[in-house]
Length: 176
Image (cartoon, rainbow, N blue to C red):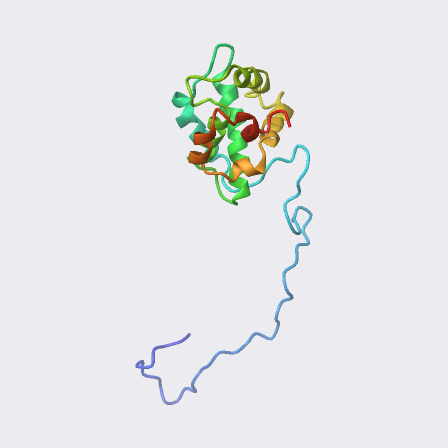
């Protein structure tokens, strides 16, 4: 063990120094069965991976009071569908979801606005229906997340709020 220079050493003991171990292990390599070599896989039904994704549930619970739904829409459907968009956005930046991710998702579909254009209302009604039941409507939730273009997800939530509802088709990717 190293000692400070001012610590006295017995004259009878030789000075010690660092010695390398006799065996140096080989470099680490991904050789376990579940180890991912390279990038995370992408494809149908794989979603968008990122750290601490469960936090979006807390954000959704906090946003529940701000969500404005019309007759025939369910807040749980809206929050799950928009949470999937928020998770996709957060994973693009390699971070956990934050309130602005969910705000952007809710904004592009008009769920934060009291007056929604009729064509946007018609588009979102059928799209979000039943999505809160993930066991039976997983594919429908993936469609919602995959629909929104990456260019929209890279915008700030304030830029998106300024462009909605006039550019909702472009922002949501609906009808492309």
